[in-house]
Length: 388
Image (cartoon, rainbow, N blue to C red; front, top):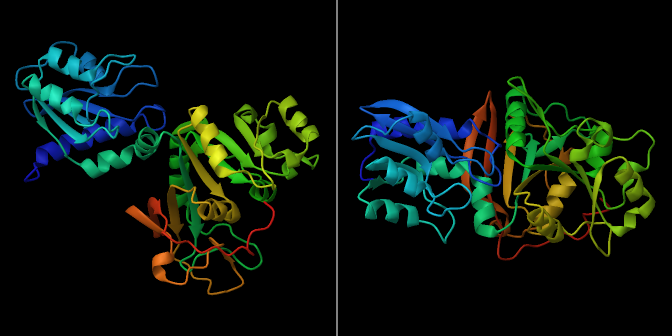
């Protein structure tokens, strides 16, 4: 677009609201919102149904209940699909409905389909306007976009630290660095990711539930991964909540043959899933974990700790995306625990950077999130990592 049309922005914002209304419910499909506008008024809306159900455009047309009036415009956050799949091509439904103007936010990220929907609509005489709130519409589906272009899960991590990069005082005390608004946002992202992961030491220290909890919705559990190469979380008689609560069948322990078959059997008898990966050490090979997630159609995993697990992901170049929450606090103590460790860059350009970065503020806390970009040469400190 050569100029921003405020009406197009307004109606696309409404389409985005519709897409967000199905936050986390559409995997492995993208969240999409659609609205039909007649004479400057929204007359019908739709959002992607769960996997296997109708797409947003079809639901908006169904909600209209009758053919749209001449001059109606369809606003949709993502390029209408041009393949039949299980629900039929949305381009065909739009053309059959007689809509002659479509305004779109983001282009289909699939290289095999990108732009094809636009071309089919234009061939049928439909005016197509693209790129309205494109950045926001693209960002909405960061998990799907990675899944469809990389053919595997988005491995993301969440860290929360002081301004000087500390996650705990020298005493180990860490609650709470970030504020309640930031923690609520974390639960929002938990609701989006199909899987959440932590290391064994985080489980033993914090005994987390790893569920999405918010006042407006019932508690929900993603797949809960525990990286525990030695199965230390099973040794004690007082088992973690992840192994005993009402969501225990959503828990998957990720381990190696070094953990012991007796503990594996114990977990499986409790209804806990166990993924065992061959490894010369107690560390789980992240590339093998990524492949297994792809096989199981788990399109995204959010790693919430500990710092060592996330640092190891970075060292292995297996972290794709980072959420970094910073509180307006400075500890100024070199004995306080640092957020990430294990690299030893000698120049700034050897550091790990975030691209496509977005910044949000939560009552004084600041979130920076973005795609992880690794330097061509990454220097590793081999003395840092012990047993996980």
